[in-house]
Length: 114
Image 1: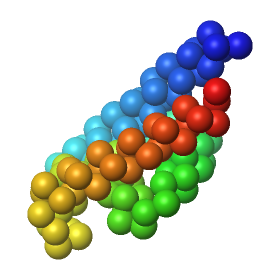
Image 2: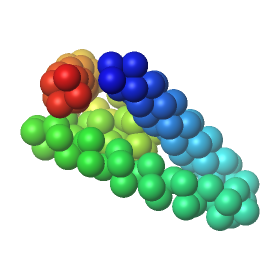
Image 3: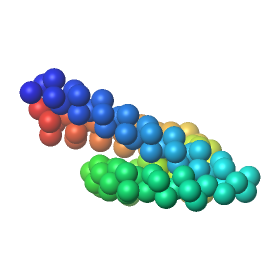
Image 4: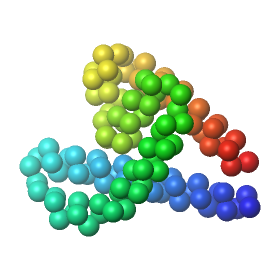
């Protein structure tokens, strides 16, 4: 059973990384004006399911500010500095909220799988 949980966690991490990577790549391409509609259409069903799963995990974070920061950095692909500017706070504050939110999420997920 423990091995299944480890496999599930690894797969979830890979999926989250792929989604974040594709969103960052898409953002860069759109900023320089390259059309990527055909790529979006191929990946859309998989991304919708993954996004739904990620939204469920993000909802486990009890802090509104933490959820906003996690979404901004990991889902929308912004840097900590961009997020800090958008939220009108320091980059160090964003870093602390990110760490606090990820720690809470990790503890919550670990306790629910044990």
